[in-house]
Each structure stands twice: as structure tokens, then as C-alpha cells.
Amino acid sequence: QVQLVESGGGLVQAGGSLRLSCAASGVTFSAYAMGWYRQAPGKQRELVASISSGATTTYTESVKGRFTISRDNAKNAVYLQMNDLKPEDTAVYYCHADRRQIPDWGREYWGQGTQVTVSS
Image (spheres, one colour):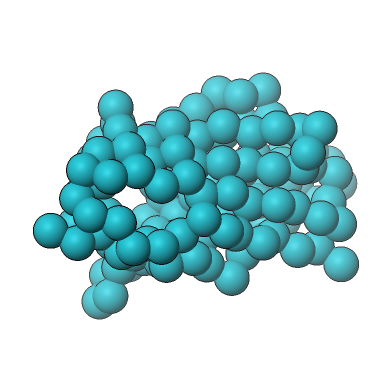
């Protein structure tokens, strides 16, 4: 059974930092591109950052220079280091796995989400 379990969310003041972790089980982790999405109240879920199996990263414009995504294939884990947090970063953050090998290319999995709240 595939599970993605996030941790590390919480309440932080503007300018502070948090580190999100996502532990994956039941998957061949290296076969998946991993990502962090977020969804704020009343808004659509958006991709925050992604990292390929080869560690190529992408970021949405609003977090560039502040957030860093990384992965540890030996630990089946992906991380999101968030620095200089802003109130607009407040959202539920979701871990996402996207299979990038055949068979089952494109199969996706989601974590349950972790709340990040940034106070001004």
C-alpha cells in the first residue's frame, strides 16, 4: 500500500522558517518525480516545487530564492525547506508522487497534507 506522510507544518511568524518532510512507503521511490503542492482557502491547488529522480528542481516564481526542495532516495523522503516565510505562504501543503517509469507511467499519489500558517 502506497503512503505519503507529511510532517513539519505549523505556525510561524513572518520571516521564519519551516522544514516539511514527506516519507514515502510502498513505492519504488527513485521511479517517481516528487513535488510539493499547496492549497490556500478559496484557491486552487498549486505546484510549489518539484524534483525529478535525477534531482532536477523547479519552483513556482513566488517561492524562488526562499524555498528549497530536496530528496533522499536512500530514505524514501522528500523535503521542502521554507525560509523567509510570508503570510501568503499560508496553506495546506501536500506531498505528491508522479511515476516516471514504465509500467504505470503517470500514476500519482498524494499525501494527506500538512497545515502551514504564517502570521504577520
